[in-house]
Length: 390
Image 1 (cartoon, one colour):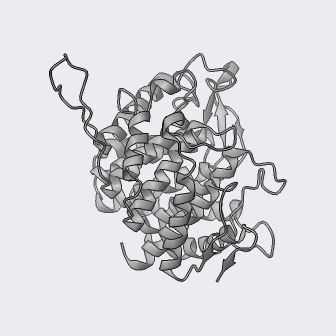
Image 2: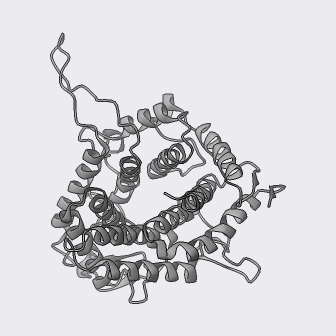
Image 3: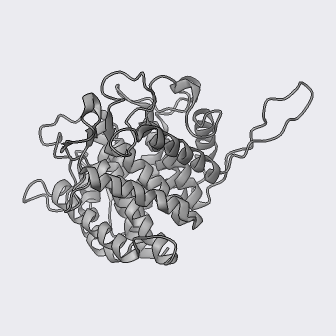
């Protein structure tokens, strides 16, 4: 990774952490042209985030204003994995390991017993992102956990590699997709439990399918295995086919198979984490096909075009709410009316992070992404009253 790319990525993860900690962030001095200032700001934010971790009472979760859902804690731990990789600060490794072990579940796929009855596909995938991120950075693996064994024996050890954990979750999604394909010719449902209340069992939401797409794409790039790429292609084609991705690359919230609808209509709400899920997945598919020219179709040129198309649509939808806020990221469905709930306030963190990572995977996007994210990083710091920035 070159110096400029590292600078961009650290700066944008700074913005991501700020988004996650929107209600608790402290005032920071940020000079976006100085890597030392960015590292210092990230260190302050990471320390602030960690103060909300209480392993004795929250089972690897962060204590935050309610409602604070389980998936957001997965996002928080992924932030700390990113922080560790960017700064080489090892302060949080043991806590990260402890939290992920408490939530990875007996099948090592982030389906823990503590979340039984309400965990959904999109909740699970935000913890899977932690494993994928750790896998990509070569983060220290989870301690090897002994299996249950007779008293007086040491037992054997489960395979706790990040790749195995990510693949286990991928296989969950494959099985659920196949089971859900009785309607709409494919697509994951929001919930994987048929007894889910509300519309969870009838709604095929975009963040779930985008999460499956991104998981498959990242595994394809990391392993070079075309099976993962084939699934990424299938998910993209299904998403575009039912209208979740428009011809001009806007990404909408979901579709329903309830009451015989068979995904015949689309909820056209746009949220930043939905397009972000597909953006980073498309960037990984570009990187995969660029390095494996004969292993998957469509080719790298198509995925590069899709990545740029998603970036243009993200710029049109989630940046520059006012003439005096050029390049500032915002959530149009709730932010201008100051009505974002805890979940919605965090969505921009996903867009900031995955735009930054996209700039590294698809170099032709770097200039556009840097020009968007630089003012957003400054704006994130300036959102605290009394902040100093350059």
